[in-house]
Image (cartoon, rainbow, N blue to C red):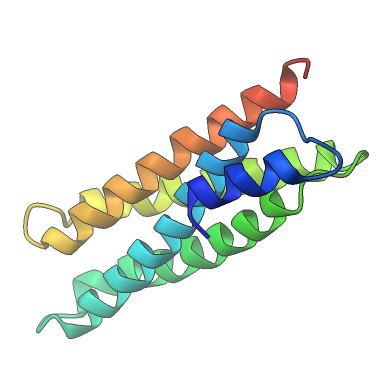
Length: 139
């Protein structure tokens, strides 16, 4: 589901959740990051010298899993009483994205797919951080 579709969905939602722009941006960034990390891991596995990329591949896969979970949870994040676990999940996603972006930055000059992944991770960090800030603001 694209960010535009998510915004439309939330406009029709009976509970009218607050901060729909932050929510839709976060969901979109999380699932974009899932795709970028998965593709980066696959590209790394296609490189001739895998040994220096093992940590990158593992972080790509871990980050993709964390972003997939976060995107799914944020998509359903309109119920009262879930603020604390949602904040924890967003914080976890940010931590995985930071680690993955940092590792990909080590390879970005040599492997363009790592640069693409690093950029997607950084965008996800920004969107999750914006979502955290929106949760802390009144509706």
